[in-house]
Image (cartoon, rainbow, N blue to C red; front, side, top):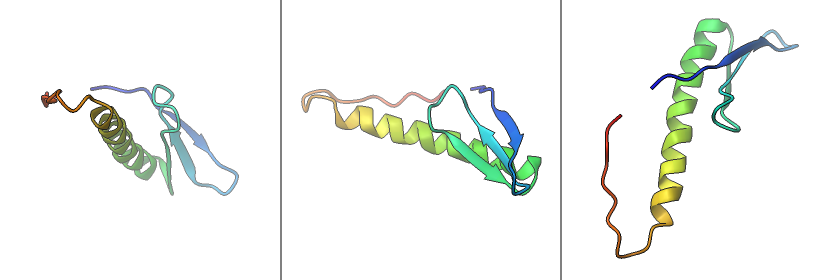
Length: 69
């Protein structure tokens, strides 16, 4: 999957990365490369957490099927 992210230099010199498509999905790094590496990890974690919330809300009689994207 592809996501657009924004990079902005914070007052303390760190680079802040945000994924606007995923509310609250923000990370940072000492430089652009580290910020991008960290936002990739944050996107994965954000998606996993949302999936877990969705699975836990399924009725007991429904069995989820895993699909790789």
